[in-house]
Image 1 (cartoon, rainbow, N blue to C red):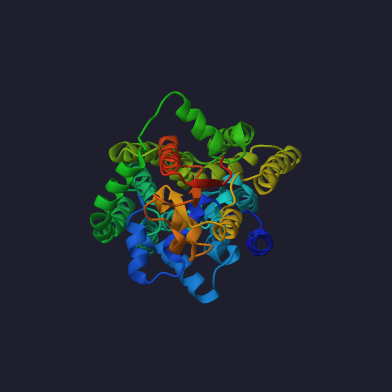
Image 2 (cartoon, one colour; image 1 turned 120 degrees about the horizontal axis):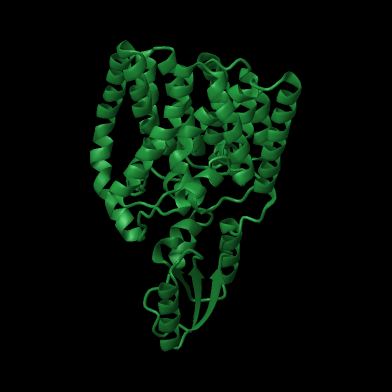
Length: 415
């Protein structure tokens, strides 16, 4: 199943336009030397180098394309699907094929499977770490956690869930696997100490703030499946049935794999004063899927097949919507338009100033046409990001008008 899945995604992965977060990663990985790559990674809050390095290697070998940029995520997603088969068996799920199907077609998982970002890779490491924990293999467990930390540090939040479960159910495993997790944390410390001040500086410059209110649980519930409230509600019903189906220790293990990372992710966001995003909770998806797959076994064969087919149809509907809905932004098209217009003007004003890096992914010559002082300029192109703040955009327009410049605004379609 994962092989067919990977082949199908390979045919479709070029289709969606690159969105801003993907382009921002490409700013750091495309045509960069290793030193420039590391400098870019450390500037991204919570980022770690392994996922960026994987993309950088592929781009160095294959050159730039949507397919090459997204290939590490696609392969990681397929590998995670294969690992889910083993994990489902280890967790006591009698029909691991159902768990694999739910996991691969789950819209939020599929979203990150074709995104040129490191989240699908970190999800793979989370699935492998959980599998090796249950199989009591401390070396493999520690290495999986270490790879996860150096891909996306939030994946490590599953380790306290594992430790808490082991404390009450298997003290020997607690000490063995706890030592492996601690070793992974120690080996990640150099990167954390190196990058932490840059993370804090970037968060301060971004203006993002940590906020949680009564709507936050609803947001998490709606988005964790990627299938809105409908898909999440169906998964919840099956997960409750799964808690009844599985032996109590197995059910508690999966429940801990959901609750503990959620609480710790919110605590980490509060500590760094960073905004809450669904990608910070991605590591709870395998536990949810395993409980749902176990819940299917509580139903009669007839209803089991109907429930699985119905849930997969809901997932496929939202998967199709993800591919076909307008993304609201097309940086490649905007760059082509800007390149065309720049020949009719003296120079380009980028607002915000560093947005030239985004356009530069598709045309590195544009930066050379950036304006200096606007005074005396008669024909100026203003390239404005839809994510820019209105007061900054207004300031540029006022400066242009005050300087007597004629200008034309090129704005990428926003959300």
